[in-house]
Length: 388
View (cartoon, helix red, strand yellow):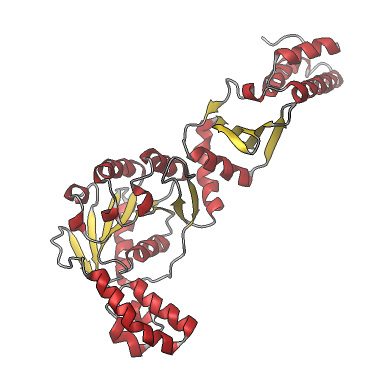
């Protein structure tokens, strides 16, 4: 039961000293005054005014920031995502600063609908990287909505987090050209049918480097209208799997994209991770160069249900990429997408003659790229497609 409150200044001061946290003071005041609400409204306002003045004066002069986050707060347990979440909320909701009497340590609190998030900042750094949350059950609903507004697009990519000292963040994925090939249409049709009956799906696209595997994946997601989260190969086996799972649970992407899996150093870890990801996602799309370089256990249905080989570009796509420059079509039609795009970029920036001179060099680079690639793979469930 909350203590009785009277208008004597000394009693109010003692009350404030006995309840160091502003939230606790507020709760006690409301509880104590509730019985007066219907009796004397003017008296209620007088009480609020008196208690507020004493409480604020006390907090400003004698606040212990290290005791601020009491029993109604919980420690946030998302590891390196804690600061990411805090910064995302800080982009949409105002930050409230409360300083102690030294001015060195500050409480930063963000109130967002049903959720409050807070931390202590000592100088220019968050103290001990500790973040606190009130009503964590409501976090997912709010965060899954504002995350994509924060990114500014439906395609996000993880950046950083490769080591314990490197901070993780998220950014908008680099936009790719919209190239709706026959393969893209076929894949979209299949994926839509599986999603309609709520069956998870995982597809592996493989083929020589630079043949447009990642572009194909992004265009599939774009055509269906799916939100994607891509994990670059440099982070696939370095990020703690809990970070990826928490990102999926909190931000709720429709698709997880994993790049260049045959360059992952820890296939055993990836085996476990893939099965975990499938619990939270209905669609995983991945790329690799050569399936023969990876543990066959990774390739079975349940980890990757379908394998699609992409050797080179569809002819119509090549013509689109070179802006229907027929003079070089026969020369570049079997190149990978990135090599054709490099030719096009040179032509746009430096002119036709310089682009023509670059053909021999680009041809050699493409041939070098293919040297170690085995074209005739004995992959099961293979779809040999020249869609992209």
